[in-house]
Length: 106
Image (cartoon, rainbow, N blue to C red; front, side):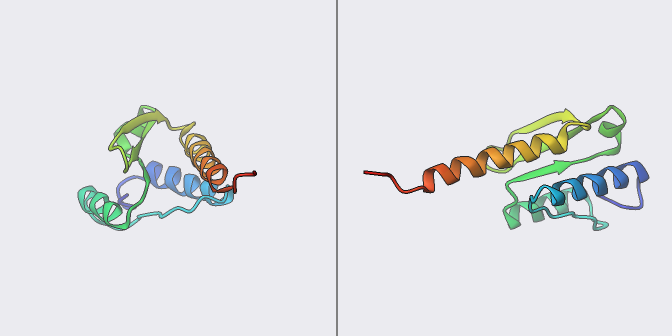
């Protein structure tokens, strides 16, 4: 996100960051003044499992995008529900991992 471009985008992203942090979700807030393609490439290199992509035009329409690294799927979601969607997906994935990690009782 280019912090100098849009105050609405910056405010939304900062709020989403705080909410994800409060929920115990590890997040990376990329607020560099880079072109989006550079930031997307860097997130791929880092291995971020999902990205919340917030653009000014989509945000004006009340939407944001969640991108999933493993599948390449891009999902448009309501801006008001985006953080809750990510939190529930992460918690579900962690619950699935935890259930697989528990030793089998004999």
